[in-house]
Image (cartoon, rainbow, N blue to C red; front, side):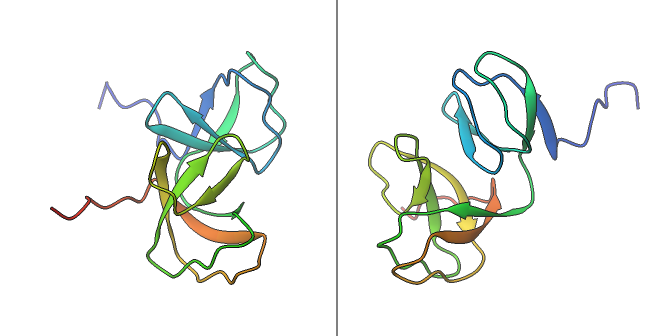
Length: 114
């Protein structure tokens, strides 16, 4: 197939701010990736866009399997706040309150019920 370019599990992207390894970054309003290594602002780097990652979460928050997770760009964590934040994945394991991380399937989202 001539138009196939890559699998898409890892993309080379250029963030507008520095990103540490294992930290997420939201490109535009819909493309979220987790840095595979340190990436400087304005420099292309590798970001994981598919798969399951252990990612920082709001500590004082209980998360259940199947919860939608939203990106808090200010604090660089995921949470369950839908206001002014973008859904970036789904929890695949429960996380207690308090705890620092949660297992999240990247890009796994479901439509909001009508």
